[in-house]
Length: 164
Length: 164
Image 1: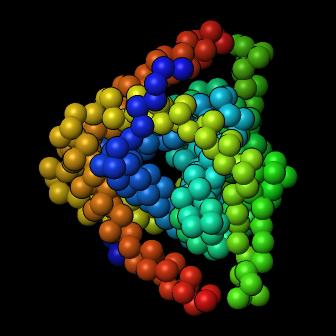
Image 2: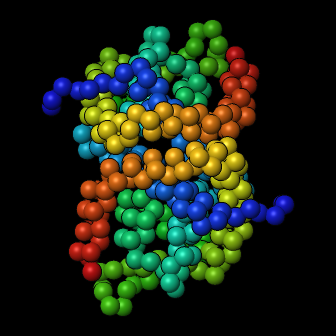
Image 3: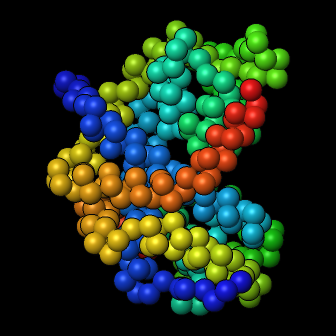
């Protein structure tokens, strides 16, 4: 390995500030969801993604990519959501290897009940604490981070396409 | 509940950009750590926090707060790290209820081997993709988010102090 460029004091401060704020914010959102709706934030995200898809259903592999989840972690979550009656799995008719997750009517109702508290918490801790200018800056910053990670996204996309 | 202020289209875009970038970045750091050092990022963070403490040891409750982890999740992680021989638990001599986690010499060596790859990945996907101005903006943004969450931090601190 070439010589490591360690973080200097200012970079460490920025990095720890980033880790602390994003970690605490996600932790706070998760606690709010657990407390008010009895599920982890990751489950809410699965229900929310499915609700926006045609037929409220999505191929498991694509759902994993959209939730930035490993296949095994998503599969575990979907099994729990199936037990609750909020999601059902079904085989893909045109592709025997493919499997879809589908939001049930009961799952949609659960999502509708959970959404107001979640959105209120997001607004309170993000949109209400940042100025309009900071929100625009944040959008550019997250776009730059995302695009720096894009080789990974491309390989995930290639993997998804290879499955068809 | 008072009327929900739903996110408008622009706010949704900013929120999803934030979620996507921070989630993908953390996922990427976790995969790098798993692949190169065989442990989740959360375990690396525990070793790193302990390494900076006097005596490389910290009360479990404080370690949980510094790693933004629940007590039960931290306890599970420390048990796994104990099995690996990287951390040991010991009772607090002055406080029978307290328990400390201490980094072992072996754990310190593991941390030293894992750090270069981690720092290189952080630099590559954060410091190398943002301009100096964006890094300063990010620091102010994360400080604002953190301070908006501070009532929670204060209650955690109060809880910690109450334990002494």
